[in-house]
Image (cartoon, rainbow, N blue to C red; front, side, top):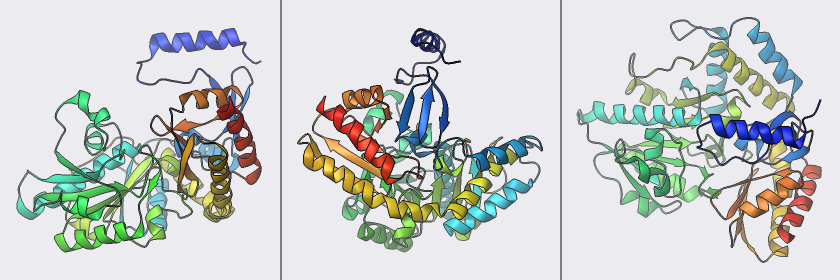
Length: 401
């Protein structure tokens, strides 16, 4: 039985009393999902163009996915990394195959994946000269997570300032400006880290020349190149990982979000060379990393990517989303730019977009921003032209209002 609006309000009030206030949540209590749609506790239906922030590649309530998780629950959920488990062994092999990397460490989130990548890079540098004073070069407007190491390489001072001195020396260059990155590097630079498509920082894709220049420079100087594919990976750009479009392979890569399609799981991967010259037994660990339940989710996700040809579908439907967003840009003077890659798109406005998001939600459309004046579009990868048209109709009305 659906809740009343008053009952939903009471739930929200209770949450505000009990939860640490680190999120400015939308005033909605979600209850269930099906395909491209979510439903709140009152029964109201929402078209979802947020996908749990680029997580639910297959939308909601996918029966094959649900059944696989139920079956694993009936076998074993957790063991610890003192033992092997079959889902983990299988997931590691398959993740290597789709990524082209050589070694895998499973984590519980994107931020934790980036933490591990940074530790591996620092150990790699330390083994070369036994000096503790190495630096990392990251990019302005980047976002790598809110844990301390990931926060240190996040290129927005607003996120870092309240927390004092960061864990290491980090310098920031500019996206698609190789010289600005090169000038930040010196003999003590351990790694360069970047998102191949910046998400939170404004839906800005790296270009081929920039990535190729970074790869050549890092190879020449023996600096590790780290690609954060937490949001732009897992098919969202029309390639399983965004760097694969350009053929510019990193030394370390991080992934999460759609890797588990709702189950909290991530990973960082590296080449065999880095694995042989960085983390060893006792250097890194996590209690839940690679547990059977999370890895069963990964295995079923990869099954579904293959059986549904999901990456190919993204390539087919993404141009329609781009065309639709370009049409909105042409129609409304307040929209100054459309940018992004694949099903990771943004509309840049000349004003804050929170009011537009709120009005769209009132009319049954869930959107998310990327900074104060950018609407971000990261729908489930199963989206079709029909849902894109529905989104555009609701969004147009919200902008007009």
